[in-house]
Image (cartoon, rainbow, N blue to C red; front, top):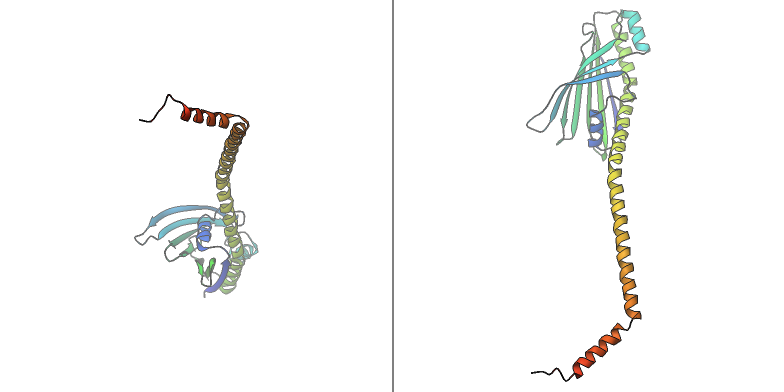
Length: 236
């Protein structure tokens, strides 16, 4: 028997923003149960798709894990490791991840698939589709345990989505902090330029005023008149 579940969620942000946040998702305060992420391999194929292989280490500690321990003797509160494979396709705007635990595989198998793509009717929104497949074997109460663990994982999916929203806001803050010095420098430059312009304009106005107040125009006119009437100069 296998427990299956599907869910969807809309992020009201463009696909590029959501994917950048998803790639930088851990650590964040919304999902403190994830203790570490380690990239084993990362390549870019001939189509420009980035392929990654990660180890995600986390711990589960909730009512469901306590019931599993009492019924099966398996302590899920210890660190759980999962292998995550992902592909980012920037041309098709699709980000897909699949993960599987590799602790307790003789008893519990948890497969999860996430797909991020632009929402068809809104280019500024991103649709996340999630799928869970949980199988319990070699234990009693298999159906009950599968349903319990699946329901618990689905209910905590909101924490992961909140984590992405947190990282999106974090990235926006980083961009604003980087932009502030540039904006401040441009404002200072504009203020300095305006100050210099006003100073030059004031000097020009002052010089014009002095010229108007002096007898230079009359003196120049008299000089020209005397030069024309001077007998010492004649045209050849």
